[in-house]
Amino acid sequence: MNHALRLLSVRLATLQVTRPTPNKIPRRILPRLQPNKLRGFSTTVVRYPRKEDDGNKYASRARDLNQQGLDEQEQEVVLRKHQIERPWHRQDADKPPVDPKGHEKNREEPLSKGKLLTTPTRLLKLILPLPVSVEKNSQNNDYNDRDSSSKDFGRSISSNDKIQPLALLIHPQQPLSYVERLIQAELPPVVENGKEKIPSIYFRAEDTGDADNAAEGRPRHAKKKEDKSKSPHVASYSGLGHEAESRNDDEKRWVRWSSSTEMGDFIRDAARGREFAIEVEGYNLSMHVGVPSFADRTHYMRSRLRRMSRSIARLTEIKSECDKLAHRGAHRLAQGGFAMLSAWWGVVYYVTFHTEAGWDLVEPITYLAGLTTIMGGYLWFLYISRDLSYKAAMNITVSRRRAALYEARGFDVPRWERLVREANALRAEIAHVASEYDVDWDEKADLGGSEEVKEVLEAERHKQRKRSSEDGGDEDEGGDASPKDKKSSKTEKQKEADSGKDKR
Image (cartoon, rainbow, N blue to C red; front, side, top):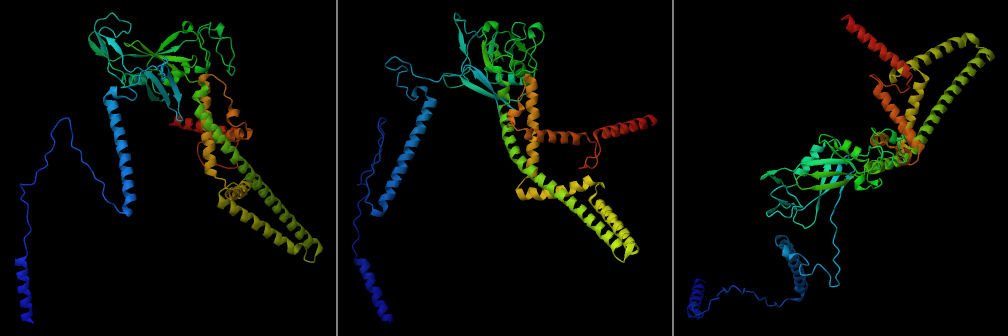
């Protein structure tokens, strides 16, 4: 065995020695690939199509399509960057601004007048048409001074060639000085006497309190239809805002307002006219802003109130039906109690006068039964911690039956209370704005024309006022005490407290 292994190893060694060595081409003979260093040309890599199997053919096509889409997207991004960095590479830059027929191209008209819009919240959205670039000279930044030799240009607010409107969110209780600071932060400084200065902002509103124009522009739904022409010192309020009739510029009288005035008060007074003006000193710039009317100011609040009134009307039907059934069940329970007492009276009468037992046996039984009933009722009222009255008992039975019906009909009591509370808050807020604009608000129209919803809201508001007027203690559902008694008790408590202080 060992001899055979030795022979095999010797033969393998001889084969390795006799195997011919491969011819190696010297490295210096192969030419090197020299990169092209010419400036006007670039090296391109030529890709030859590979021989693919039938299984990978569709996968390769999908890869090619995906790569084509990525290349197009990358090219579009590069073009957009060029448009931003180089304005002459804008889209359609090679086309003339005028058509061959001689008609100018339709372009979007820039915003020339500001707007004051309402939002779903209590904030107001002020949109101002600030200029893009302001031309100014070394003296006082006058546009009309064309004879000045040296002209300077202000910093560009926007890179576009049209007016970029500026949007500001303002609370009605913020002063005009806050709006002034916001506008000043968006404008470049002016040059006055060789020094830079922050431009001053002035707020002006139309003055319509004169005798000639006081009787005009009065709405049909105004509260007091008085002859204002006889009282020139009384300001007239219309509440129409931008919906009022337009007047000539000669008839307008502008009044400058202090920067410490609240925005809500300024808008309320400016609503007598169609617009108010914001002037920028140094730029000869006047931005006119349309004033929102009462309908615009309360648009979101009234729409929300209408939506809530529909939900309240739908829930009111379920609630009224459940309340009727609960009261009917309580009355039936009371009638059943009367029937039981009548039956007991009949049994006592029959046993006493129509049987041999007589009064001697029935008398102690009736005493014990009556005393047991009184003691049981007293313990029951002690347990429920209510007054011993028929109204308290009825309220307990009605409330239990009502809660069961609410649960069965799917009536959500917390949601109902929240809707009524929010609706009353909206009513109060809209009424406050109506008093500011001096207009009559048609509440019934915004409540869906339903008297039931208004009665429900008024009842809930009365309950809230009644609860807030109470000093403390447990709230009685029966409400036996009248408002006069409560007022008298309050006055007595105040007198006792004052007498105690005097004694001290």
